[in-house]
Image (cartoon, rainbow, N blue to C red; front, side):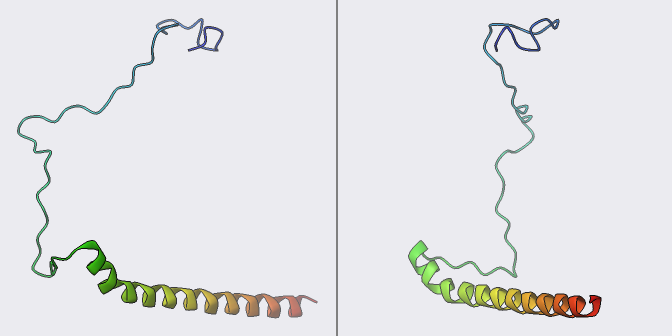
Length: 91
């Protein structure tokens, strides 16, 4: 810390020493830091590699993105039409 800083004359401020950053407390022994996996009967677990997963779900994700983009375009057109009508009736 620069000794000419606004904190230089404050009590209990260490000037010229390294900064110390505190971290969260270490969990108690009875607290488990390892999370157990959540298994649910409604979730299907598919064992496959990253390339196979990408190929399997790529088309589905693309369809979702296309739907969101079409929805965005439709909302933009509606917004433009509403603004046009609003401008016409203001004049």
